[in-house]
Image (cartoon, rainbow, N blue to C red):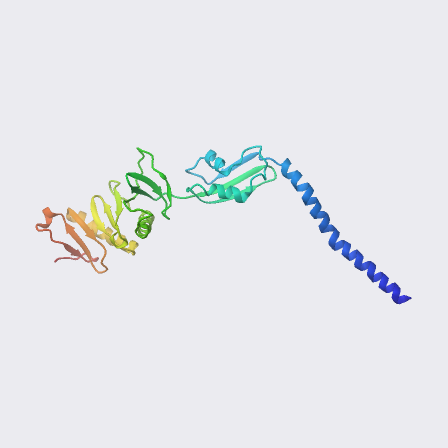
Length: 265
């Protein structure tokens, strides 16, 4: 008799434990399925706040998001808003937050234009990854380096090298005295810089080191008041400077070591 009572008590405890474990989650699920859609329909967008944009206007970004005031707050998912924003090449990254008050906060990180791409009589703004941001409007003037005649599609490897080089130029704040800085080349090893009408053969890689050597040789050229046809920085142990024909006589070249000493070939 005592054993039967004990077993009955155990069964009651197990039933209670079962109810406690199953019933609350079921009730929560039912509430979610019934209440959340109702709340979703009741909550509306009261304000759209945009932060971090410098080039794109607030109205342009809001149009990209495909949300508007008084629309359902959760009518467009955060993932869809992010995907819509990324359709603009100017948007590097974005974050979206919705508040139950109806405020939608959109924070964007825009790409920074560091150079121009001149191709087929058209000029485009590009960033440090070589992403084409937009075509320049006629009459616009920006004192940025120009990658000239290097097609990103047909000549991708050379274009990537030119973009890396122009990124170093931008970081080092290398500018021309008159605003003309051009990067050209049909192969990565042929990358060349034209600055103040002087052709500078740069080649591949070691751009920071080569720019340091360029600063040295430009100072020497100015000090000697030379007119130069080209400067060749592609060699590790020397800098070749070719004076313009009127100064070189028969067009000879000058080699300059980085310590300032010069000798004639």
